[in-house]
Length: 220
Image (tube, rainbow, N blue to C red; front, side, top):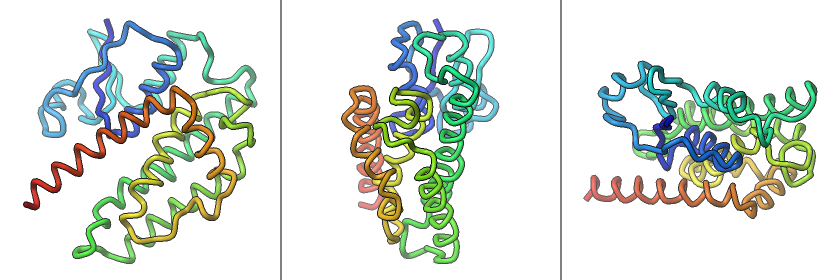
């Protein structure tokens, strides 16, 4: 049995978990990463980040690579579209959400602490995040899903990305990027009603609450 090393609050892990749920895959164990976030996890996966998919004799790193691998091994139901053009659009949305939204928010997390904040760094990273959200506005088709009126890998990336926009961006004391992207905002409200998205969001919120509790205890 394959094993996915994952964490509730990891948006990249959430992306792969949502894909697993959407495909109804039952022979992948979801497990906490041993030795993470300390250096011990590098013995399992050299990149030492989650998610990581353990095949038994090899470990696949990077969420996008894992998603593509699972799509090939479990082709039904297809989550990468039915035509080259549709697949390109799905991949484009997923990459924008990954690189321009999630990655910039992650790099900006230290700027959530007002006492040590660099406004220049905060403004640069949140500006790039807002740019990513505005770009998504161009690509979403208004169907309630990212592409083609059905759940795809683009949705699997967008759901955790927009979770970060809604729950982490406010700590940076900047305007809500969704205010300038009404189509993205409408998508976000609709997709949260999808059972697969809702399942992943429960996990993300649980992880966020656990992290906040740890921070409160550390500051006590």
